[in-house]
Length: 319
Image (cartoon, rainbow, N blue to C red; front, side):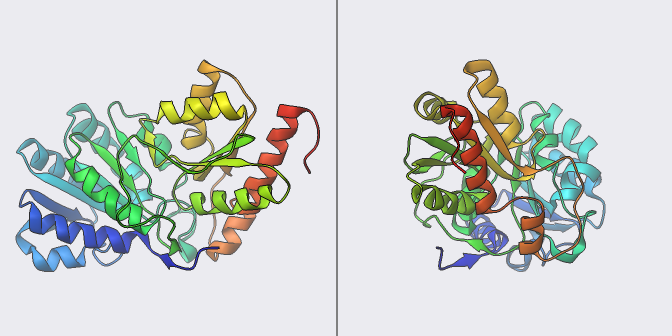
């Protein structure tokens, strides 16, 4: 369905380099992961604004918060599992409590980190970040959106968590597409059911919509790239017009996108909903395609969830 795949982190690195050339206040900090998170270009172009902090994630966030308070725009870069767990106290207090203008950027978010396994797979990072008052959370769906999101994050005033994946993912947006924090994008229209997704799961949602269309089911596909704050306007329209929703995320179904959408639906207008994501479990090593299939994160899983939700909505089976 999609001809081109590209790692989000590659375009993040390109965006950082361009930001650095345009704004001397942009600085980058990393924890021994320069190549993995693609900050090499920035480090070579602006060595005086690049800080190799060693494996001291908590200290790195605290240092960045001090830089932000002094007027700089620090991008803190590390793996998602480390950014939100090892550094959690500093993220909570130094970033969150102080409302510091730090851009906490993670690579290797989610399940697709290959042989690194459970210790490096981050299923709970978005949930942890949602708990911090004032934290904005952005999860791009592809490399182009990661590029555009990086510029938006830099302009945004306040603490931000920007989550990127590791593996090449389908490119479904254009480089000149408008990106705005807090404003979701409807990628496909339909009124039978809405599929609300983010990250790499957006491509799977579009594939699922194609499969559903072959059964006469018209699915609306929403790229909810900002988990916090949610685009309530787009979500409300989906609830009112579709009356059935499936969420899809490369994250635990507890406290992430599915949790956020469910919370809104529960308080606004309870309708049938099902969450596609990692259940209450840790991960394991394996090839991405194998892991995605085992943990139920495929286009087929989304389509099957949609059929179950429609059965609850209408009262007849779509299997």
